[in-house]
Image 1 (cartoon, helix red, strand yellow):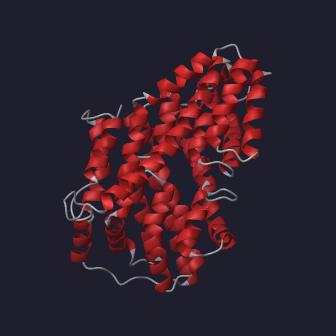
Image 2 (cartoon, helix red, strand yellow):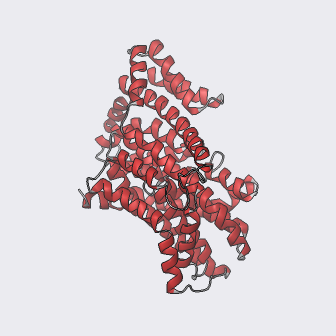
Image 3 (spheres, one colour):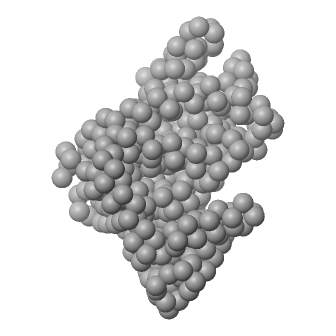
Length: 425
């Protein structure tokens, strides 16, 4: 009865048009006194404890670093380096846009930020070079999803906080899948470019490659500093986020001086708005998870599934279908915070590694970001191309088959995700 009441109220509130955070908090607040066995005081205590969660402190710093990176010239220099590396292949500009998305994802942790930073530069350049606008928009829209898979990923931080899984291991687990997806997209582009005879850039000189690499070195080293610092025992993931935010304020992009301070307050305001919005969702979602845990809802579901004799592979099929449908209507953070407390105990009982589950739970919402009706990357692409939403959807959907095939591989070949974490244990 409690389970039914909790989820019925949640979905009714969401279909009424309430923000996800309000729907999560209000359904939790109404369930406890009417159907539950806990007190309202426990909810107040849980809400306060959420604000003190050490792991969640990483989120505002990663957001701040992403805003600095997006506003500064880092994206432009990374794109120049990517073009120098792969622009001379057939479909080289499109391949360079994927490589640029991979590089920018490694310093921003956000999918929409990756689409904005890279897409606002490369889509117009690809059209001028002779690529169809729909082809350019579809490539960048899908490649931008790498922003939440390649570390540092805000969504992986949220999953780690919701399930008490090591954020450092999750970051390492995201590297190989992120590189694999990027390479698959680049391979598909190369094949299509040969068939459609898409243009290629002149071969760069060694000096151009070295100069562009040196120019973007600071951004490229940032991910090495973050992951190296975490696994070298220099700092925790939360401290690494603070380091990344601090290192982004440097050089000719942003100078904290009297003469060039003008853009900084606006950046801080933008980062604060995103942080407040995200933390409000997280606080209410953890409240929702507290109600689930208090009423033993995940444990009861897990006991039933184990009693039915469902194998691990069958459970993962159900998880993928559930998360793909949810990804069509919700953003990744909300999906993780609602579903992780339910799926995590079941997966643990079935012997599924928590880190592997985390990558699966990120790849599914990643696909959701390019599927209508709520795919966030679709609307971001509309904003930077002035195409209609229908045109962007038609441009993005052909690439969806690659993402779905990648999801199947990542789901049933766990070593893709677990190779690096196990290697560095």
